[in-house]
Length: 498
Image (tube, rainbow, N blue to C red; front, side, top):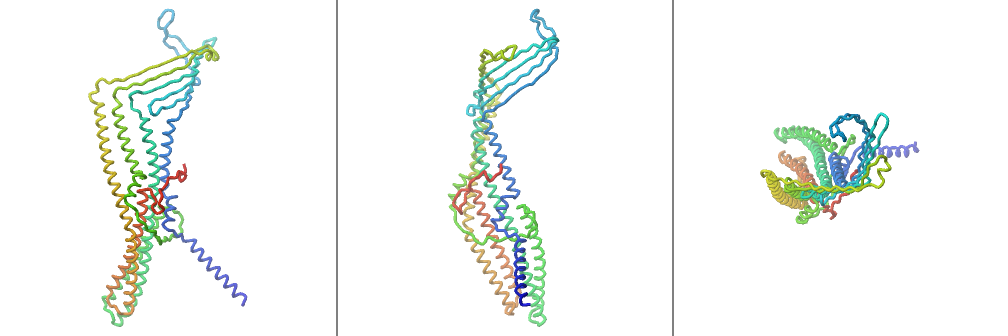
């Protein structure tokens, strides 16, 4: 028997530790930073932001590919025709119908390269054509070779879209990278909203449970005092009413918690049923930010300012296009190379002859009744509208950044006051409740007011925490700068699986 006691004690301790461990495993405890990391990895907003950037990445990659040499092969292998066509008799000069039956084939291999700053293109090509005329008894072959052709196509006095694309497309890609970083910071903002909504719901449930317990105790004590004639009936009824309200508040708090938990898990795409317990941010390293520095950083890093510059460039491009289109323009085309025709394939490549082709096409509108001038004036008016809009939006954006910094710098005082108010309110309620329990306070109104102040102070503290973290991530989003660690928020393409 004496030997069994240590064994039973050991088994009891082991069972207790196992139960505690299972309880810990079955409850997921999350801090704000934990929730943000999960959201950045698997939330719908994170998935959409990555897909949006992927589209921008491949759009820019496709644009760059248009300035690389293009290799192409065109071929017809083969083409058979049996027709009766109208031809001119070489002896009589009369038109006659002649039956034809032949097989033809051709192939052309070419390499072309765009010239972005001029808007033209150069190419080099090599081709071969073959015709096999079929008769009742024989087959007559004919070959035409073009061993090499070098050509140039150059528009003159025309709108050059490639020149403008070389300015705008890289800017759009840079903007997409900054926009992705801002989307990530927006995920932090959204996550903090869901986090504190759920945290507030948990606090509401805790408060509701505490209030129900308090009013249950007070109501039972009050019934005894009423029977002894120490309190009036209206005080007893008032406590009963508060007890009933506490029961209703508890049920509402449970419903609110379920709703907040569903929204939180839905945004973070948490699919398991493990209970979640949020841990309030317990430590904050307060710091201040220079408003002017924040405005300068936003001008340097924000995708909004990049969008301003892009819109101005696009407006200038549209004006240039309106001025160049519908006016005097020309196009120069030049081709030099070698060619040879023969009845055999080998002979078609022996001693080829040189060939040249140069053409200059022009288009001179004589009078268009003001159509071109109207397009130019419309484009110029739109450019002025864009300039005015960008100027006003720049002022508004800078002002918004400045105000966000001022709001953030106020959070030290706000959180400190909220924390102190919470502590004072709880102490006041404990004192008021103690006085009521020992019979030194007969009015239930003071106790109700103390309880209300306590609840509001605790909620106010967590609201102050939410405002601080929301302001913090909003400031990061506007400036793309980590003021806590004094470093810019860098784009890393490795974070995105392309």
